Image (cartoon, rainbow, N blue to C red; front, side, top):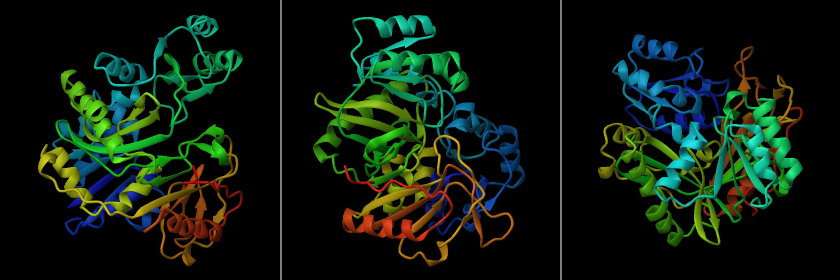
Length: 420
């Protein structure tokens, strides 16, 4: 089989490495891929959002299966376009991808179908939003979210009225996240441990993967601005079997049924961002694809063929799939560029990669145009260092040892992944 994976980050590298384990896969293409993905796949210079270019490539190269990994092409209808051309693919169509591409859609869906989530209000006018913030009904801190996609950074937690008004001005007036901020959601701040659960679903059956814990802020002790994610561990120590059963009953199955009822069944990988509050588990957000860096921590624990699972999602036969995970612990530590998620410089040589053993290195933002053996930094998040072992402590030791041995100018990483 010839497989095309759309995207060019660490998540896509993890998906490609997992797909390679299936003996039926004869060739993997990545579009656009990155410097490190070239080790495992042939990179194609087609933008992830170029629908015509991507469908044309799939047709011209007789691609048997396409995995649409990032949120942008899903929201634009990449799956719809591939299906129209008769190309088998993995991922939700445009209507189902609204679960992530519109916070307004997802919050209203949860309200309608009684899926537990934070109380919220929706605003399309900045003055109305500011008047609400000044009202007595608001208890700080509050959470302000851009309606649309914002690279995982469209959420601002405001501790007081001034911060909240500044956030509204930044999102709605200054267009910090472009048109994604035309509407905003203002919701109550939830407290408790955060859990990510990725789940395969064919629109009828849902199979949760091993839980994980993402570390969003750029600095240790949850300080600094939100990023796309600075590391993850799997499984999440806060997510007990009892909580898992409650989530399946009150959140996972109701979400799948709600999407069916709305006439937009969800097929693909559905990401549940959960908060374990004192009132029970609640949904913080849905993502309509594999999370990054959670995927880099979770997929190494998968013992079943990823391609087989994905095909069972496409064929709506997930109910008969046998999905097995290792009982090991896994950790992914992200090495980032200094200044990320703000302004950062790239183009620095990465040293020490050849000496690393017993860990998996996922390339997120690297290039190697000049010399196949020399990788350069090319993004905010540069590498994902993933290790697994019988205990979390041993996995952390292996990952951090490798993180110390790999060097590039401005290297930054959190030292407390898995510590809370």
